[in-house]
Length: 110
Image (cartoon, helix red, strand yellow):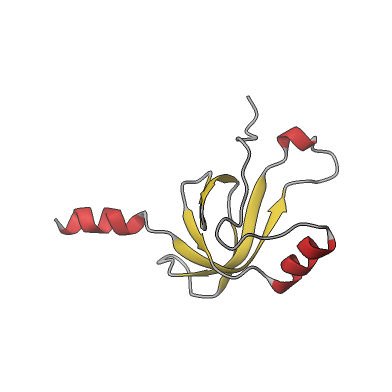
């Protein structure tokens, strides 16, 4: 029974604070091959110290405030980074606190 509980805990999302969305756009990658990822401060991850800055693998899906990445990690999104909020506002984009990440299909190459 303890093993099952541990496996369930492994799939609980860790919290990501002060996050922003980035891409692998190097100026040469065509838009259809660009992948989005998150950067932020992680909390509740047994492998990292609370407050450590991380860059996730590519975003695969998002359901409400929980994002799943290509590696299978799950993150609960807390507050976005103020500079990211400012950038979004300046570019006419809004961050919906209930559903902050919009993912349209996978951009994984065939």
